[in-house]
Each structure stands twice: as C-alpha cells, then as structure tokens.
Image: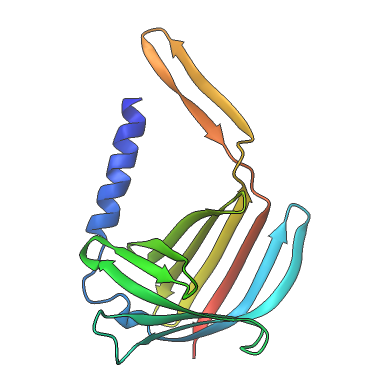
Length: 179
C-alpha cells in the first residue's frame, strides 16, 4: 500500500514541478493539422482530417485562449471551445465547451490532460507538444464499469488494496503539425 501512495505522490509532484512558466499556452498558439486515426479491438476503423486551433483571445481579461477542434471541416464538425486559466502555476486549466460543459484539464510537463465520464464511458483526452512543430492528440475510452477487481486481501501482514481495471473500446490518435 505504501508503494502505491509513494508512486501517486511522486507523480503529483512531477506534474507540479514539470511546469515551465510562460510557455503554455503561449508557445502552443497556432493551427495544428493532421489526420485523426480511430481504432478499436479489430484495428483502424476510420481516419478523418483534424485541426486544433489555439489563439489568444484579445478581448479576454482572464487570459482565455481559443481551443477549437475541427473534424473534417468547420462546416461539418467545429467545436469552438475555449481554454480558461484556473491556477496556471499549478497546471490547472478548464476547457469551456460553451454549452454549459466546462471540464478541468491538467498540464503535466508537455501534456495537457482531461479525464471525464460521459454517458457511461470513461474518456481520457491528451494533447502533447512533442516539439515546436508537432502536437500529438490522443483519446482513450471505454465503459465506466470495471472489467475486473483483484486484490482486497491480506498477504501476511500486508493489506493488499483492491485494484479495479476498466475496459478500453476506442483509441484515437493524431499527429498534428503547426501550420
């Protein structure tokens, strides 16, 4: 049990200490385009053009940025979200979908992550700036109901915690280039 606590504590400290003040979201500004590949257990099932638009909103007093997602084209599927600072010094932001959905997102080093549940599915979205011209976007999702539960026993003097695993059903990945 102590091992798990130490691992999670180290991860949390790494997220906080990995912040590079002044680089996010300023250095992420631009239009990032590429192809989103969608996979399930059988392999790749679809590919679609994708763009992530990140731009400072000049009229924002809070330091908001556009955080638009475009799938195929703006006419077909445009999601004009906004990135809202909450506690940037701690890597905490929100993505405002402009429809009453506002989700916390966390910057750990080069990766912005948002983990949420919608309609019975767990979803993890990540955006990782791998260099000045490349961003990798990934989505992992599966049902919220656990696939298995193990542990929850005692081994000698050690209490073994319960560990639940959750299924994955869809994986999406795009390597996006700054335009």
